[in-house]
Image (cartoon, rainbow, N blue to C red; front, side, top):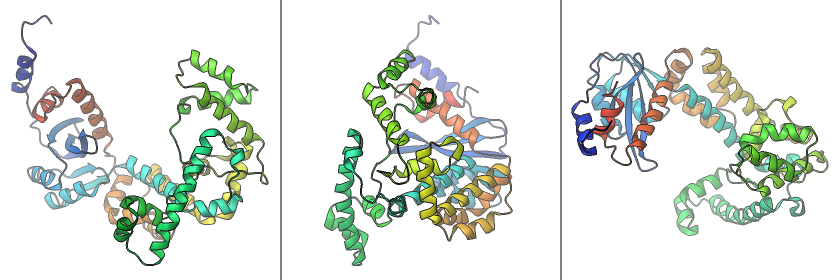
Length: 388
């Protein structure tokens, strides 16, 4: 704008002209945002009726949120995330308010619970498929490295489980073995048995196109890679070559020649995908798992029922669903829903959700990064809220 002023002057003017909305609040959304991820967090509160943020709090401690909420006596609905801190603060400050759990997080929690169930069942899955022993000669180079790591992890798992069976507490196992407490807990819970751990692939966005080309008869990895490079793909030829190798071997796979078990994440995805969208090899694999581990099929049906309740906005089956789920492989999900049943029921039935708050957090991140570290809470609030 060709104004003869310094940057600091402009920032000072923004701070001076900042204003906080004064309209009464009735329906709010509350969630945390990261000042520095995994280190320090703040809290954002949004007016869901007017679709705008109203205040930023310096941390996400329940006491801080509770102190602010006590000055909002006419708030009757609070949409929040699944964390317990905000729920406790709302319950103490506004006991009359209806709490609404975040629907997206409920769906994600259910999907993650099924993934955890698959991880706990990996030994039974390997037995069901008949691949308790992996043939290293059939593995790609990257898979062979993962298999060698799996063998090392199995030695650690055996040592930890031996101590656990002797009655040694987790704290003592951590001291004796030197492993992290979370690692020991995962071993004890049976969540560390994957042979091939999932990796984020650069091919994810291109898989539909690759599948179509492969089905059309284009099986040359170099030709596929050159076509993808022209459309903006930046990965290496080796990534595509290994994908093509896996596809060739998958097409030759049948019930008697299964050579390896996919990762838990892959199995969870295949078990929740329609059979019409699976290859012959994948269909054979999933059929073997379903026949050999019926508890996993029940867990899938329970999770699908929970998703259906949220999509259809029907909360009547929730109580019976909790009872059934508490006796299954997704019992941890059922226990969490039971503890927060009122908010979960409200999430299914209410028209309000925390989606607006999540969107404002995305906007806050953009504004924060535009300021290159100058985004203290007063200036951030002035730009995000005072500029409405």
